[in-house]
Image (cartoon, rainbow, N blue to C red):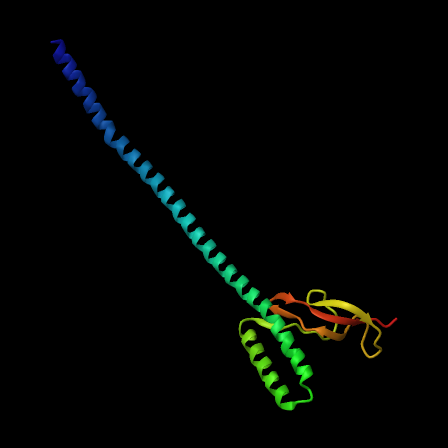
Amino acid sequence: MEEEKNAESNTKSQDTQEQTSPHTDDESIKQAFKELEDKYMRVHADFENTKKRLERDKNQALEYAYEKIAKDLLPVLDALESAKEAAKDNPAILEGISHIKENLLKVLSKHGIEEVDASGEFDPNSHECIMQVANPEVQNGHIAQIMQKGYRYKERTLRPAMVAVAKND
């Protein structure tokens, strides 16, 4: 008889568990789904952020490479400028050197590399003052002479223009 009571009691407790179990299981499944969904969203956001960071790093590396190549080409431009000065007495050579320099400047310009404007007022962001000179034809604080041309890559100065600034006191 006692076994029957135990069996009946077990059946009642199982019935009770079965009645609460589907509801509890449904809630736990919803909770587990929500947790997995949140985890997925975080992993996806991390992936997207990593992808953006890698793209930005790649672009910065390319920018640095272009800037480095441009800096390496500046002495070539200086040499062409010196060759033009030396070839003033020979028009054919002067013309050839001028064409070479123009073509090189066009290619560099196409990639964002341009000469710094070294006329007018002295700008410490683009010019480097090598000396001050007395020149009544030029206003104080303005560039009187260009010693070496400066260049910039996009908005960054690769090399400032070396200039003499007028000081008329």
